[in-house]
Amino acid sequence: MSASYDERERLLQACKESREPLLYLVVIVALATGMRSSEIRGLTWDRVDLRTGRIVLEDTKNGERRTVPLVGRALEVLKEHGKVRRLDTPLLFPRPRDPQRPIRLDHAWAQAVEAAGIQNFRFHDLRHSAASYMLMNGATLGELAEVLGHKTLAMVKRYSHLSEPHTRGLLERMNAAVFGGQ
Image (cartoon, rainbow, N blue to C red; front, side, top):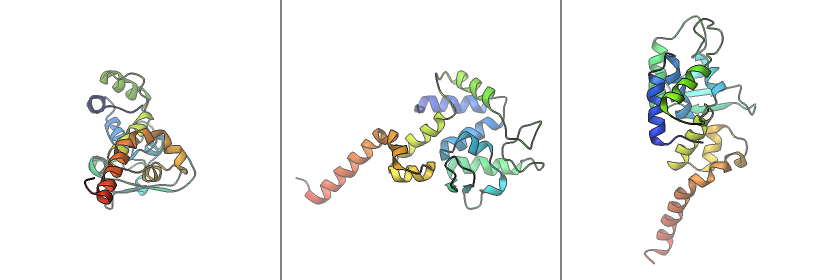
């Protein structure tokens, strides 16, 4: 399931208003990159290059190293977060009372989803939302597979229905170029 525009805006507002200050940052990173919850929560500062805008993931689900571009709002919020980060941990998102362990967001996430009035929306659905947004903005299935870290195109085929308007436009432009106004 992916979030509609209204749902996304309500969810982001609820995350901003959460008593867990890191929730908003984590959700922005998830929506902006399509990264998995475990990848985000386990991020360490040595894997994030704010100058070049990239994240290097060593321990991914498929076992392969992956570089994720960090741009836009996600880069902005992480730059701000870097200015006030904890120095007693390498983690970007540590637990408040146990900074050597990644933050747990289950309770804060559930509260934000409820406050946003969204039904049946899991944190992993942010990954699906990011994939949908990328496709709706012109990404190919190959590009999507690379960003999300899928080894095969079969893994991203579930999003192929979303790329139909893009492929339709591609064929319309090609036909206009080849056949002119006919």
